[in-house]
Length: 73
Image: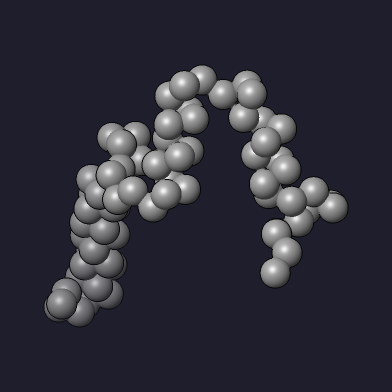
């Protein structure tokens, strides 16, 4: 099986080109992601954003249903 290519360059080749420019922190995060570590840093945790967005969407749907004369579910 061959690697994923983009214009003849594999993802592994692109990674090796960029890696020398990475900080120690960037390299560590890349290794954790590649190794499938379940730990999510604070920047990558979208739980709060998802909860707020879902609540806002549901409020909007309920408002639209009320405006149309329906009982929100």
